[in-house]
Length: 273
Image 1 (tube, rainbow, N blue to C red):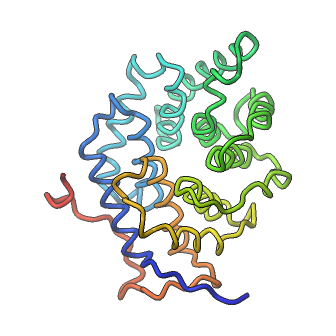
Image 2 (image 1 turned 180 degrees about the vertical axis):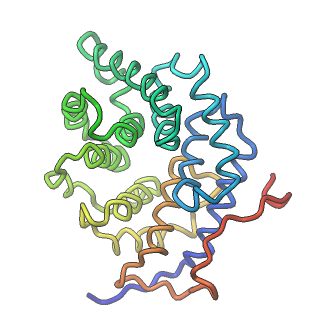
């Protein structure tokens, strides 16, 4: 295979995305926007989660929301609670968060027999993927959720990507669905495809080069500040994966002087809006 040269500087892009993640966290109220906050913290969780004081400070605020009486009152709290539990995995509060998630999950599954699936929270791939991150093979209702996912793999590419990722997290074989993961021109679809191809590189054997080429093409027209928090986290994860485990067929000419340096920036005024 002929190596592909990317025009984008992955290292500069990584720092640009990281700066935007931090800016948003500094300017967001976690209690008002728990899902956005959880995705932004997920981005920081990908790298240096144990040595980053900024992550440690703000995960405590997400934990405060997760343990509050407000968390779990709305059906759509399922996703941020699941991400919260995933990010707090191994801590003393994980079980309490899981308890809230399972309660919401039970209500959602029960509601499926009484109402149209279109209006059920489990029809939302973002909600389902977050649940799959937290529960994986631990959930008693795993088979029910998998059946719901398989019925819902339709619509736009970004929707399908998240449902397929959920199946992978639940340990399900996804080979029959991979042919639908084809490159598109929509930025959200391309970021989703790029993210899944990097995150599950050893599982889905996706067209990694093609997705990076697609992103390379649309990148000049993308405003990082306008990307959703979820897509921002996905893009950051894809970049980190490619930098730390570079595909030999992808050439990024812009190598840093110190490629081993992956520290988070010092939080000074320059990172505040």
